[in-house]
Length: 290
Image 1 (spheres, rainbow, N blue to C red):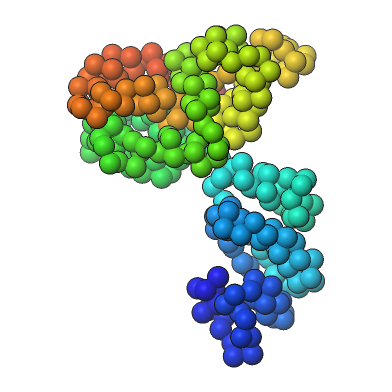
Image 2: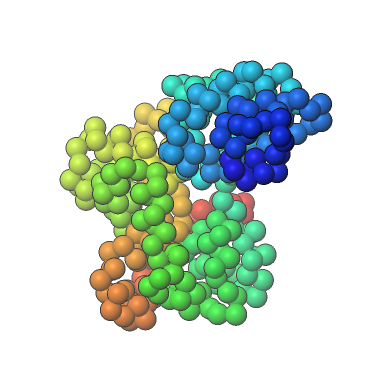
């Protein structure tokens, strides 16, 4: 708020640095079309539980009656869907549109790694998926396995801990979700297999999987011939985030070994199983290219 206040500072408004409503009231006085974008709005909610009610008043009193256009952004899907879009949120029903930014598709990552062959692109996409920040960590002057070693397995690298960070950002108690995602990354795609792997009962498993699907970490594929997909018993569960799938398959289970010798882990625990691992994501790539 302080940086915004500096840009708009006006001697007529002494409270501008401490009051969102004062700032928006000031902006609403202009007849010009003004766009205000607030990035990582969920962080603001965490620091001030009443901020959604404040922005409800701002929308009702100023934005709805002016040329202001407000954009609220956030990387925490769960927080946005519950605290901003959810029916219990003070902001419920006040949005004029919403846009969930999806990962890049396979074709697009070639622009980030132009020197890679198609095979290397498939290998890279299977490891980090379509998030620009992740794929941008890789260098096409090095082969995919060198990048995996240096950008994911090496201690201190962002992608070495990003898997845990992602889940802890979205979920208060991620331990059970870790177990489910690990089960799926090892090829347990049937509901019963995941249940046996984790030891969860049916009701709990359904609840946890629904949350992971809502967050975009897991998807449920059902044969197109099924008339009632949600009720079908033929649904299979897959990781819907390539990076998380890689992290739970090769990083999370081998953290102690990685700590001692990441290069050895690459040679003995990643490379021998990578073709099989890539096979699962290649199915999704093929669907994209059809």
